Amino acid sequence: MSIRLRITILYTAILALTLCIFGAVLYFIQAQSTLDSLKHDLVSSANRLGEAVGRSGELPHGQPPLGGQMPPLPFGEFSNEQAFQAFPEREIARVLDSQGRLLASPFGREGDALPLSAEGLRALQSGQEWWETSEVSGEPTLIYSRPIVVNDEFLSIIQVAHSLAERSHSLRTLATTVLGAGLLIVLIAFGVGWLFSGAMLAPIHRITLTAQAIGDERDFTHRVNYTGPPDEVGLLASTFNSMLSRLQNAFQRVEHSLQMQREFVADISHELRTPLTTLRGNLSLLRRNPPMPTEERDDILNDLIDENDRLIRLVNDLLLLARADAERELAKDALDAAELLREVTRQTQVLDPQRTITLTATEGLRILGDRDAFKQIMIIALENAIKHSQDEVSVSAQPQGEMAEIRVQDRGPGIPADQLPHIFGRFYRGDSAQATPGFGLGLAIAKTLVEKQGGTIEMQSEPGTGSRLVIRFPAI
Figure 1 (cartoon, one colour):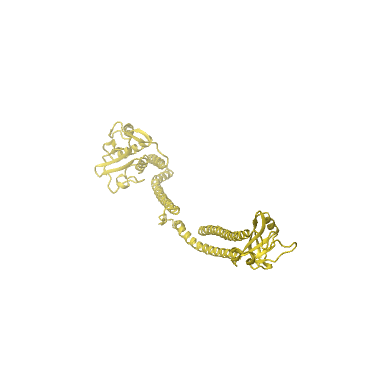
Figure 2 (tube, rainbow, N blue to C red):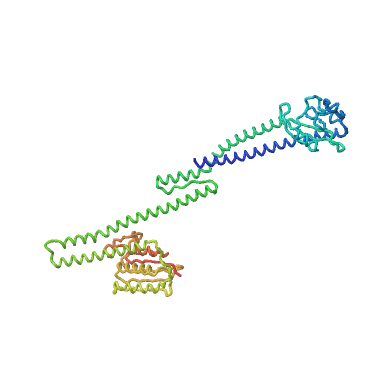
């Protein structure tokens, strides 16, 4: 069963229950109201007749003979009181003696007696009024009886009755009307509820279609078009769209990572192919029979050692790059940039003792970063400058607003403008760097480490003048 149908049925059931309760209450109020009105009329008529009998002080018949009963009198002969002379024909009234025998009726007929139970007669004789419902002339009738007491003497009984047929008919008509109207309202409400729930659930249906389209097309650019109020359904649509945006970003990052991984694997394969091919060829030469001369054999062994060292350097660079790419957080410690730069400069100077490396750093310049990562970045920067320049290399560090700016300047041939956007790519080596030892991983490693510490790195270069690597770290 769909949610739409369940909501419609629940809404209709609640409305039907409400209408049933309303109809039952209305029926009860109407039944009680008509009964109370009927009782009030009967009591008024009985009181009027009772007062007329009380004023006469005695019964016109006197006492009936012992063991006998006198025939009932018409109201016109029974009393001269106006209440009896002008008694309306539509009302039913009887006058009984203290024993419950009929004394008078509107027409004085023998068969005019109204039912009175023995229990009711005893109640009346004890001075209490009495209500009962009996069938009279084939119709249910409400009968009210009250005693007439004059000078503390129980004189007679007044009975007033009214048919309940008209009341029962009115109540049946009311019940039929309420039931029919209720059924019609329920049917209309079911249709309205079906349309209303359909409109209310339309955004959810669109969400379902969007999710299905995403699953079929694998396209996270789809969005739910919701123009309704910011209610729960609107919040659901908004949340779904936000989730799609995050999924799209995550999917794009995954696609980018996979693309980089494919390129990375292709680049590694390309870099490994040359030394491995050289190793394989030299090993084949060493197995040649008859053996080659000792001098050629020594040259081949030296080539094998060089290629092996190159492979080791490549693997070390790849491991360093993998660690830099890892999601682990780097430390955020307060570092003395000037002191660390002096330490790195001394260590790098060993690579080329004849090269002049000058350092100009603002004393007390402090940055926020990881000590080992900072040293690794600066070693890469200085090694890169030494490889691409035969002249002096200068290093400077000074504050720039909220950042500390470090510049590594060489005096090499520079980098063409069309190659600058790719300089930080993995395994990228410009045309002028093809003859320079290395694998093109250094600047990629430096960029990853700098960005993980909240800094920036860029290469500035002018062909024929030299290149300048600018690194910025958060200063404290």
